[in-house]
Length: 236
Image (cartoon, rainbow, N blue to C red; front, top):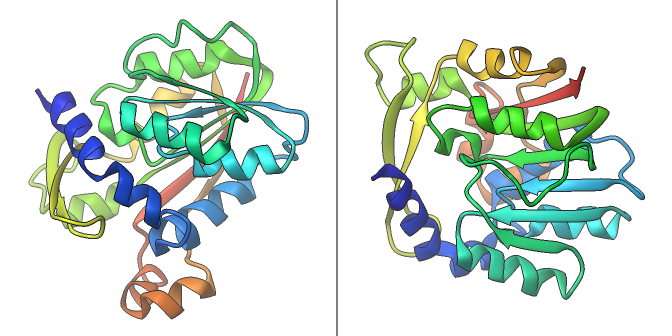
């Protein structure tokens, strides 16, 4: 199954991913600064870090005074998140294509989900669960692969399809095949608006100057065409 392949890929590269995450350009100087810019003041806020990986976002948010609960489908990633945060925060193993039953209704001020929703085929239940756990007027901040970038990158035949795609990542040690789901822009927006959210801001991000020093080729490309898209949505 595709889910098992995704889990295996992330378990395979977990330790190297953790070693590089602080300064890997697409994460540190493209995704994170743009996502963090969309967050309100987090001091004293309860944040659910959905698909937390090795806990880098959690580390930043805890240092800013937030209370963080994080989960990931990869046991190795959860282990690394616990180690990185040295007893701060609460981390558990969970697949967010299933109900997040361990998190209570209306208990979180913010849900953050970075570069993970493209690993599930149908967002409906996941977005409904994000809505359920958020307090009234709570904030959801997500980043995803940009649908136009993916359509071109994977040389898709029908833009409107939601389709399984795969590519080989070479930036985290030995080559790893990573499966995900490509979808059109509408399938990134309607799961939010149909399930209790108002879209407050949509960002097609640009990299920071630090990116240019480490990867000038992709810095130039990302200033001409986005790879990611960031969305802030508010619970109705």
